[in-house]
Image (cartoon, rainbow, N blue to C red; front, side):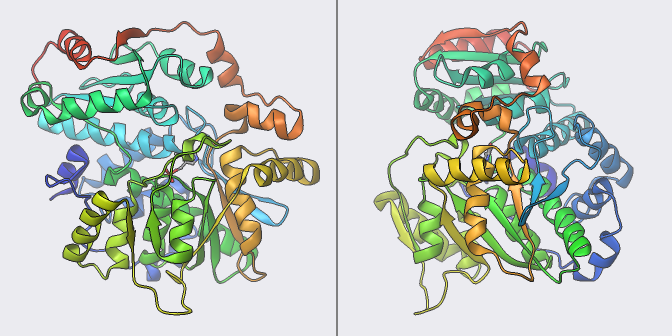
Length: 451
Ligand SMILES: *Cc1c(COP(=O)(O)O)cnc(C)c1O
């Protein structure tokens, strides 16, 4: 499948995930790349996977980063014993902007070539919906319908979505739970006639383009920190839920970036850290934590990693995942006394550790971090070594999660964007948790056929 079709379908026709045919080896390019700007590194990496004409690709990169508020896009900042890689300078102040700004522009480019339209249908409990809306707002060939459970998401996140007034954006407040929203969405996607008629599309976290866009900051930060610290290798600590962000780091490692360890950090929803410590992947119940964007049990991108872990044998992978669907558990063979994977280390940052980390970094270094970032930093501190600098991914601006910050420090963090959003006018449609109501709404607001 070509890159264009991979972006437009998201999932493979058999329900599996798409992976690149080959992982390019870029080791002999690194010295040269370390002198490039963030935009130019992006270009060098994307062109290995994306067959767009060079000039078009450059323009697309420029547009995708235009709404970012920091000239370096994703700066790495030394703070105490670690380097903080700030990924939250995009329009919604969370790292998902990096991937979703690209996805919006990729969609627009491909739809323009094909003279097609798409209606994106999404269900969100917060972060993703907001970043997706900001990724496609105002784009001509795209409409987006985002369902959220009415009154059940953080008021600030709701405002970030409903204050977008572009005519191609439809916020649907569903009188029900997040599960209801997801059920409605899945059922609508299963109706192939409806799906075809409306050109339904998705922006979910398994879209290959999202992973691809995230590979870039591992290279840019890794090369920058290796240079500035005169180190032969770096470590990355990544707070994770869906295994999307850290998967991009794994690809960077396999492409040849000198990564000593990928430190995987979870909150109390620890299915992934248990896996990397025991080889056993077993569903538990979802707990609500201070880092809600990581309150996930089944990690949708994990099967991409498993494919490599199982020596790239798709049959073994399929059997394992079919068993997992039945039993809620799977395990991989681990040599006695060996780690599950020599490049991964994993741990949990629990509630007390998160609050203590936020407080300590504020008091000692004057640096305020959000609770997701604190999960990563807390686990990173247990896995530091002297000769490999530790780069901790900062996935959201602290003002997005002011409750945890208040609890940890007594301070009220602010960001002018969020302050503005609180009083902005909004547009949102309230609907019952009924699939027919959502279908009728899409029918009414998507009058033109898909082509
Ligand atoms: C989505 C999200 C994460 C987790 O990212 P994954 O790709 O699911 O691992 C971490 N922090 C924040 C703020 C997020 O929005």
